[in-house]
Image (cartoon, rainbow over all chains, first blue to last red):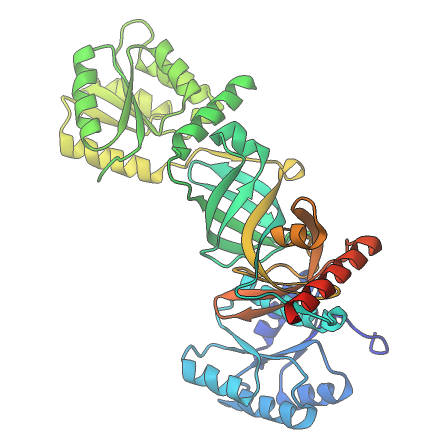
Length: 238
Length: 233
């Protein structure tokens, strides 16, 4: 394996062995290839042998603030190229700012928001593919041109207030978008329904790693009454 | 507690009792429907499942206990809160009703504060009606979001949207820009996002238009060059 280019290789640097193992399990399920390091020296040695797609570094390795030193050494030896994301239970912005100033690209806080972490890591992983983007590039004037994007999703359930669905795209909480399916015409008289994403989670499903619960937002529709009428008709039909 | 928008079915053979309850419930914002007997109640609840049912225990013909049994036999009404309306002397029947699936009881003539508290408690605890699809039958839906095309390159688009598109997950882009560049009607392209940067509250995606046929791609490139030239002049 070490002779070939390992796609999605991620080094996890954390002296907490259990946390490292938990992180590795999660990352594996999403197609990453994690390697755990519980101390600074073994990690820095591995970096000299092979650079990963990204390193996840705990800011409090063994002694407080040792993570900063790791970032400094990686930057000193390998330059700006290696992707570094710090992970820390520290919520104060000062420590995060310090890590970013030292050259970390991003951070995640413990307890880990898993959907957000996987989304962030996926992006780091994909940036290297930008090689295909070549000029001449036409920069559109002003704010650019309006576009409508359609993404795939699978509906898991519908209730009076909301719809639950899975998708391969990461939608932050608070995203407002339309969900489109002919079933909505049958239930609500409209093909697409405006929703507000209330919650997201990792679904561990093939091709659709994120689960969502999104509340109906359209005004002027009595979603509850229409839905219960529909569910009543379903029951009668069966 | 307000009962705004909650649909409550009142089942009682006494028109006066129904009127009193209706006044009280509507005063708290509930939407009330009435049934005067068991058969009508079952028909109404099946047709339009309410959030909660107030069911008189003592009715001529099919009584409250039988009606309760019929309601609970309906798959859809298994979890609907049902509160029995009883006279204080009917203790043995109340016990049977609770055993038969009633959630609670209210003694007539009802004490408004007690009724209100019981309604609040059971409506809060009630599971909403939900339709869950089996994993194999999940409807394939589309999520539709609005974004802006900021730049067009030879291999694809740079698009700004308020969310993070999954790497290598298919996305369809529909834009008036394509109509302008290629002529004809607005066109949807199937593309795969290849790279993402977050920028403030939004995300910039470099979208590789891999689904583009070569002939169309050439036309697209020529049109971009033409637009660029005209802009420079």
